[in-house]
Length: 260
Image 1 (cartoon, one colour):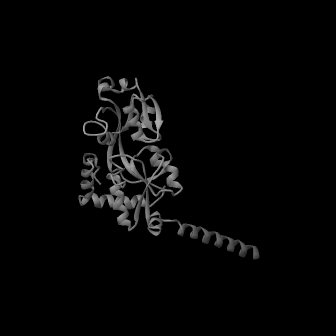
Image 2: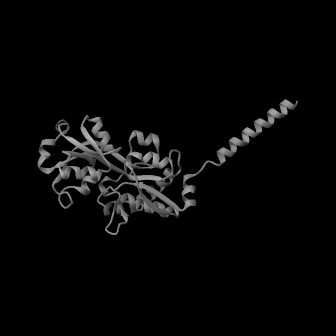
Image 3: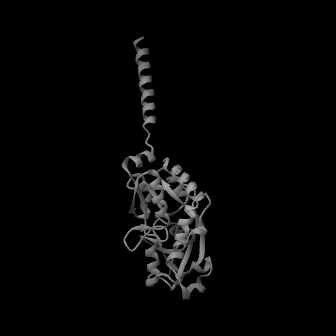
């Protein structure tokens, strides 16, 4: 009889422990509201995240993150991260989201709780304009060496195509390598190319040629986080009322928007 009572008590304790564990599972939305800040992991990536003349972060992604933070009733903090360490930064809670024109690769989707896509994009080859005719297709593009951002979709495109490349810290650094003549070309996001190179930009002597991939951008949250669903709801509201298009038009990415 004592053994049966003891066994029953152990079963009850285990059941209560499991219930307690389940009931204390943390909500990311509540966690962010309680600490009062949405910490956004970014890199310097115009037109998505970059600084204005006053040193404040602006851009399509930055402005959208500010709107979501407002809907949460919290402040927003932007933290520049090493893009190659974005998953680690997210999981150790150094940041709450990765929101920086992030391509929804299979690795990203398996490692993060991702939002619905919000922008279309491509990885493109950037070369000096006077060399563009010689790099007009993928076969020709294989004949030169590239600078790419470590851990980026551009690095993956270079790897997938068997291109020779070096890794740098940011896409903007990859562009600088080409402008300086220390790399023959670079592979960056089409949206960034539209903002950074060509007539009227800081790099008028550069142009983009081959599109190596087509892809979609999404926001990354911690795996299992309910924040991704919250952002999806905000995307839908902000798309339907025209705010998302207004912000996109401000930064010249309206043609890339994905309907929510």
